[in-house]
Length: 87
Length: 271
Figure (cartoon, each protein chain N blue to C red):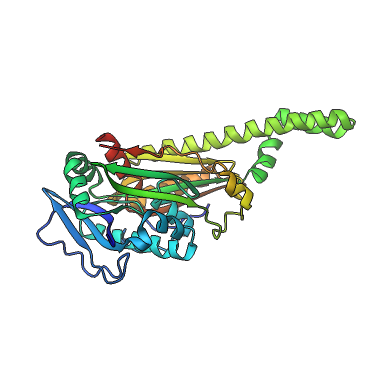
């Protein structure tokens, strides 16, 4: 097992998380992301995230072929569906 | 329109925010802006739409250097804000076109945001990651399964045609064993963290062709600040009990509670 052993530090400590871990938290759809999300409120575009991202520099990932990218291969199973919201 | 409002977090209004030196924001030269509505404030900074508009952002996200710098900046700023006040941390890449859009969002979602803020008071996110290496695990699981051992013996003692069929049968069995083992481990850790955390969410990546480890699961947990150390100790001891070649368990955190503060869900509930 490996562990970051961070819990003893103050939570605001800026940890040297890997980019993989960081993006897994910061991007709603996870490590490898494809998708389009637009949330609109009051008919004005409020939040837009157009992500079509592959983290090829992360050591855990192998370089995909252009054909794989072009085919839009499924990446992860995710419990947060993309949405277009109007209110 | 040249600039948009990049949103970092939403908190309760204060007379003095006392966040201290925040360092560089998402765009150098633009300080944090506090947009207040009733009891809530949105903590933003101006960003140029030439970098953060829909098309430039999509382009920038493919630039790993740009993305890493921006993502680390985002996380650093939210950690510093979180040190001064309880906030709903917003995920990366949330941009409002105008301050009126921000005010409208706060106004229309005030009750839900206040409820969310109350649920996040004094809590941080810890993440348990399970990485399964199928190539290594299949040897361990296959050698301890009677049916798998029998098939391996038949493959060794059969002619080419029969051996091929037994091999296919063995591969199917190995997939079942691997799936079953992964689900069992995910359930074991999820059950364990539920006793330590008020909220738990998880996601799984199965058989991703670009991941060396054949499957991956991350379990995010909302943990009170006072329980962070005991949480990690508990996961350490459970990991020692379940130690197997081919399974790697990692704990990361504390994080701002990103997984429990989805603005998307806030907006969806309000729809």
